[in-house]
Picture 1 (cartoon, rainbow, N blue to C red):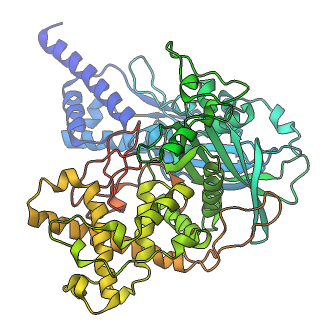
Picture 2: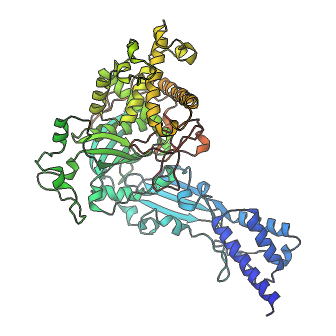
Picture 3: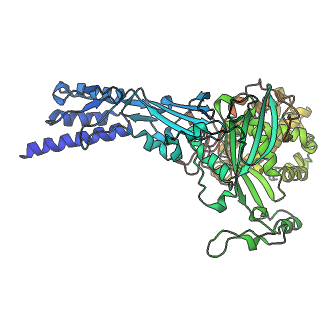
Length: 613
């Protein structure tokens, strides 16, 4: 073999490798096609590719290089068409169903995205008329995965391009039983099945009954259920990750909340429970805050059984703390963190998100040693749901909060050019701190709620910067209230963005802060309109048996934004000119004016921006 033949042989091999990599990644770029076309044009192929139809055994001959060699452009277009013909969009091909125990469908829907499983392009190669069907038994979420197609690409030798192995790609997110042909489950009597854990609330909506149950993931039944539905997290919660529950100690810190529709007339041998949505939370241990009173610190550092905090911390060898008959590590000072939250698509727009969030809040903040409830990386839609629920609760259940107002008589001596903004004089600081500790709402969230609430008493027509040129000396009470409200809110925004703002010139710093404040006010105004539309908010607490005390209206359009908790939506949907805001745990994100409103996602593909609010 001379040098020219060797070069041609290597060129053909290179072309095949490029095509294989191209198909597997399903990324169509002209550079790749140019390489393929160039090398195929000069190569002398020794064999043909063919496509076998799995279902009909029809063979389809691909054109060889001689037929494609009229021009490089024709070769590129032909190859591109072949790849397109055998590629499938996985989001469009995937269907999720809830079924009875006998696999009778109850409802079906599609995921909004599939890239965590099938890659950024959400596409696989090697199939025509591909269908990926995931069915879940509605009560215990036992999954079954079925993949079908009309035709499948099959290579005819070593090194040929292969069709994507669908089962291999999806197996990481499903239990092995999802691919089993065992029919025993179809004959199982599930009529007496009940959710794991305890029922904490029930309510009626539009003549239908719903129940909310909670269980520790130390329960094998609860853990199995969570593992069964794990794939719903990457399907519906952007940036969401599957829970790692391999350590017995860590499972005790996790809880799952299950919202079920209770079918009054289930089929024979079928459970009446049909999953509507779920949430998960985990407990994070925390040391006492140095700003709190010594008495409170000492109380929280000692458990009911008299054991000290140190006695329950991990031993020097790193082993897990050992619970005694007198005390449990779960009695340590803690934060509860809401991790995942999902209302399934068929049940959205009906207020179930508000019901589930309220039940989780009440249950998680009741223990004496829990200091506050935090949220892990909420997206903008969940932020709206949370704001709505929290503000309705504080206004209807905390009289001191309901009476908070802007003080319009702040002494002029406290408003000097070099003085700090007297936030505790504008809105009583002692009252604010007491309410926050009692309600256990995270500090940043509570601050935003105070700002929203006090803004609501200023008429929308008076919320204009042009009206407050005289500042605190304005003769109009609403104008003075608005001036002090902006001062109060501006102080919080400045503190949270200090590192970025102090790098700017004084004039530019003021402009950015004013622009950020205008954006925050706009968001608050939109939320207040939704809050005012709720004349009968659903209470945080409800009886475990029987109807909830009140029903809330569902005609305002809010509920379609209460679906998921996780990373933020794609930036193209969330354009806002903002500066950085702090996260709930004090981890500041990056950001400047003009950044989209994104949240930081652990274990995600990268660090995202945090919106100002």
